[in-house]
Structure formats: C-alpha cells, structure tokens
Image (cartoon, rainbow, N blue to C red; front, side, top):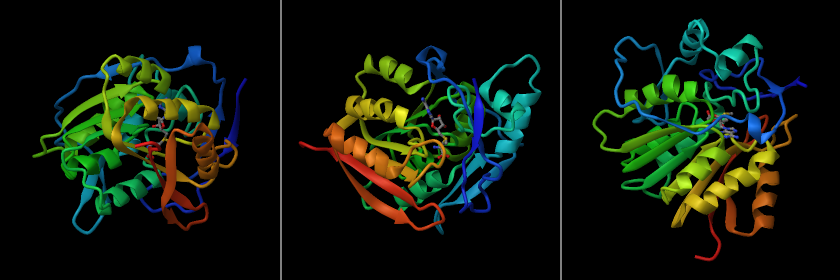
Length: 284
Ligand SMILES: C[S@@+](CC[C@H](N)C(=O)[O-])C[C@H]1O[C@@H](n2cnc3c(N)ncnc32)[C@H](O)[C@@H]1O
C-alpha cells in the first residue's frame, strides 16, 4: 500500500531544493529497512565536480556536490537499483524505508551549520556523530572548526557514496579530522556501533524528527553514544505537516522518557518556524 502527501516548505531559500516536495508513504516494517554498511572511500578525483557553495558566515563556506547532477548520474547508471532512483521515478523527495531524503540540502541543516559556526561551545578536538547527514554540512562545519573525529551516517548507501563522501572530501583539505561513513537504518547502525563502544562529545542531526515512530530509535542512539558531558543538537521544523513529527512532540517524548534535559537554543521565525534543540544528560 502506498500513498503520497504534501510536505510544505514555505520558507525556502534560493539554494535549497524545496519545490513540489512530496513524501510517498510505505510500510514501517523493520524487515524492509536498509541494512548497515560502512563505506570506505578516502579519495576521489573531484576536479570536474559540479558543486554548490553554501555561505555559512562571511568567512566560512561549504561546497557540496550538485544534487541534480548526482541524481542524474545515479538514475543513468544502468542496472543499478537504489532508493534515489526509485524516488526520482516517482517524483518523490522521500519514500520512508526506501529513500529518506538525504540527496537534498534541507533548511535546518543550514540553520545548524550556522549555529555551530557561531556557537560558544568549541568543537576543537571533539568527537562528533552526524545522524541522517545527507550532504553533511553541519558535520563539515565541525571539521572546519577542528573536530578530531567525524562519523557521518545516512540511510541510503548511494547518498553516502556519491554525495556525502565527495562533499566532505571537497572541504576536508588541510584538516586532520578522522572521518568514517555509515549507511543504513538507525536500528541497524546502533546495533553495529554498540560493539565499538564509541562515545561522541557532540551528536548532530537535522530534519530527522519528521516521523514520531523514529523518536525512540534516535533517543536510543543518544543514550548509547553520547559521552558523559556530551551534547546533542537537533535542528528541526516546528511542524512536519502530514507526517506527524514536530519539535514540541519530540520535546514531549524526551521529557516523558526522562533521560535528557532538553531546551530550545534557537528559534527562527518563518512560515513554518524552525528550531535548534539541545539535549544533555539529566543527572550529570
Ligand atoms: C530529510 S533528510 C535530512 C538530511 C539532512 N540532515 C538535511 O537536513 O539536509 C532526513 C535524513 O534522515 C535520515 N533518516 C531518516 N530516517 C532514518 C532511519 N530510519 N534510519 C537512518 N537514517 C534515517 C536519512 O539519512 C536522511 O538523510
């Protein structure tokens, strides 16, 4: 069974692909989710790569690959089956459990990138995880601010391989940050990473709380992977119309769970207001 519904985004900035955004709804059965994969790519020839530049502040910009070029390349790859191709064929920007929207720069990732750039908390030397990274712009800003380790995670392996990794490589010149790249559903990511006993000082995530059914998957990762004095930043719209997610709904979920303190550190007024939420361990 499938159906589509609108995902309105009335406050789009010029660079962001927001027009005609649709979500195609599918089943949420855990058997159907994308499996865990670590993708090992450390270099790529990007001399002729078509890129888009996002100005984060007067002195800091981030280059990412052009998403339309990447989508075209993936769709033209003969014999390949992937979520991006399926979504493009359906003119859909998000098909749950098939393609989760990573091949687009969404507004809140830019909000988070700008917030991190101006944030008083230093990222120098920090270990950072970006969940649901897409292009990975907040993570890239963390690298530029001296993070020592950055783990990028996205649902779709083709997004990670053809969009996230090249985009990180475009920006990682002269930085000594150790990067790793993972794809797959959060539940699968969590069970694999538990064996590494990894803890992060900072966990970043933007535009990932649109589906309430995923709140426990996200929160479980915060519980397992956030260091004792660590901080999580969640950048999100106040409402994801038609899909059920919202900042207040997520805040209620966190407050009922009781493990973390949650506060709004930034509100951006817009047609649909946007926020940056900060989570810290309650009893530290
Ligand atoms: C709307 S996109 C946001 C991408 C990027 N953070 C941005 O703001 O531009 C949602 C992201 O959440 C991730 N995501 C959503 N559901 C997921 C799940 N169940 N498991 C893993 N990742 C998921 C996908 O990787 C996707 O890139």
